[in-house]
Amino acid sequence: MEVDRADGRTANQRRPVVCTRGVLHRAHGSASWAQGETKVIAAVYGPKAGTKKNENPEKACIEVIWKPKTGQSGKQEREYEMVLKKTLQSICLLNVHPNTTTSIVIQVVNDDGALLPCAINAACSALVDAGIPLKHLAVAICCSVAESGHIVLDPSKLEEQNMKAFIYLVFPNSITSVLPDGSKRPGGEAMEHGIVTSLTHGVMAVDEYFSCVKLGRAAAAELSDFVRNSLKLKAGNDPSKAG
Image (tube, rainbow, N blue to C red; front, side):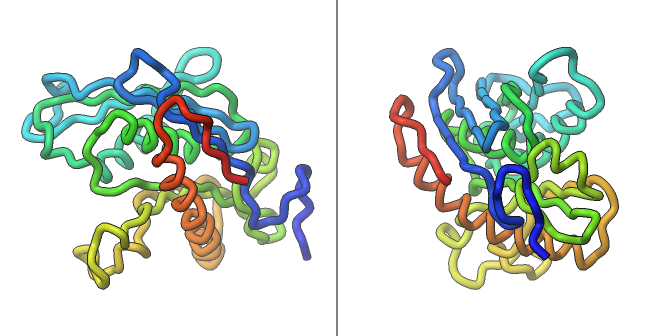
């Protein structure tokens, strides 16, 4: 049984993506990421001397500031800041600029679903634009589980509200291109099969979770190609687009 989606997409089809770097002239690096009607702008400031309280001065500090489209930041925004900070800390080379702070400001332009993955993708592009040293890039995607058990990729806001559960997944981007074949994580898992971040909302069965991971990984591989191509463009060029 095929899932009926309001915008006519198939269950495993994501929305068109547009990524533009260098959109803010006063930031050290910036990028906008639009996925369907969801749009986020990320700005990077730093690295600046000194670290925040309770941070390790022997490493660089990552600070994330989430600005909603309207109103004040609340509990959900704090959660997004925490997840985004941990995700970016895992891909940044924190020992290159010790005792410094790099601030990433996320401005929500419009939220039509999969907001956090779009913010992560925008932040990664902005970090590259700012020249921040990275171990590797990361790509994020959202998968959801319908009441019928069907797995739906990249849900819109309305679809998210009608799903029994959804999951935000972040995968390493192009890890095999910078590491030798057979490179593994400390636990023995091949790096290209790893997950940087996994955040679940709602309740799903174990097999549904792994189905989401399988579909998300396939979509992330496609997004990885798009990100690598978009980052080849210089700031100020025409935005890169992916259908």
